[in-house]
Amino acid sequence: MRGVVRYNSGMAENKVSGWSVFTNRRIAVTLLLMFSSSFPLPLTGTGTTFQAWLKDSHVDIRTISLMSLVGLPYNFKFLWSPLLDRYHLPFLNRRTGWIALFQVLLIITIGSMGFINASEATGMVVFVAFMIAFFSASQDVVIDAYRIDILRAEERGAGASMVMIGGRLAFLTAGALALVLADHLPWHQVFMVMAACLLIGLLTSIFSPNPEVPVEEPKSLKQAVVEPFVSFFKTPGAGYVMAFLVTYKLADLLASALLTPFLLEVGFAKTDIGAVNKVFGMLSAMAGGLVCGAVIPKFGVYRSLWVFGLLQAASNFVFVGLALHGHSYPWMVAAIGVENFCGGMGTAALVAYIMSLCDRRFSATQFALLSSLTATARTVFASGTGFAANYLGWPKYFFFAALCAAPGLWLLSKLRNLDETPSTP
Image (cartoon, rainbow, N blue to C red; front, side, top):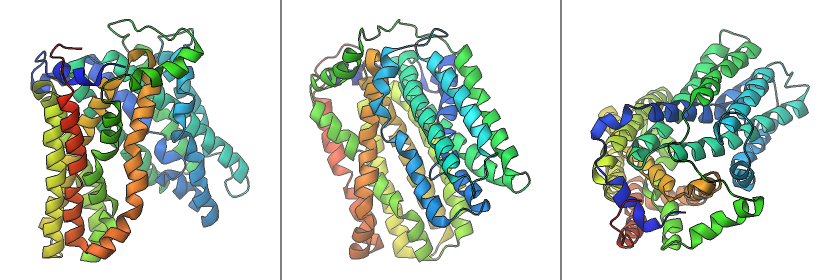
């Protein structure tokens, strides 16, 4: 892994100007592959489309809830990521061969899902859904690694924004569009349409470019398993990096964790929440990601992370205003728009930072490990948000959430102080 301290100067290079960073083939490939990477999520486990199909098939609600366990491969994908770093298939390149294979397997499994009688063949549903999750998690690992391999340093911010935008478009297609189609088509046709959408990723993988700089592969499986950890913990400030990845999005997480219960309690209708939060909020987050991609090449990642972190914290004060004001559509639209826009910028910048930390020899394993740290806050800290909101009340809760940006920003300043090398990576 590269030294932690060298990233900022690399990202600060002015090789591109503003929005022009988006106008190349590598960024387009990143967007299309991220769409394919996120696409299977709504179709398995806790996904809305998967659950709606089970409900229409008269599967018991208790069984539906247990189906969330088929998503476990997403939590443990780092266990087999060294295999994807070490070995490659005899067609395409080191990464795109795997991507193409997983796309074909996903097309087959997703396309076959709708032909299963879910109420009578629950075991088959579990098996196929688990395989979809496994193939999807595996392709996530390879697509993340391939993105690191092909993007130049000054393109990482734009690439990170494509990660977020591609994911949102995938959720919209495999989630909302699939549910709309299900009102007009039988479920087996819906799943066939969803499977056909993955042809986008398959074709992209076939025609994707090779990395500009050849990447040395691990020489053995032992090296692929051990060296990613050794390489990371040898770098200056590794402990600060781990803590930073856990805490940077904390303020944003706390604001969004209880957003729906908060809005319902204030008196907004479910239709209003769905329209504003899911549609306008998604567009705002995508806009924030695009701004991040244009800003990072000019100002560098550390300065961008600092500014976006402050904005994430400040966006919580709009919720404080909504909580004090009460039921107000302008306040709700402003709060959701500002929070998603600022959160989108912070998320894209954090992804760009993680990409910069990965040694390209082990990018599949290291990105899987480092990105899993960012999920820790979502899993652990979110569990206590209800107790905090109940004790503090909504205005004080959102004020407290804003203050929770402090640990991540302090750690960011420590990492910036470790940047002792002015040269580019």
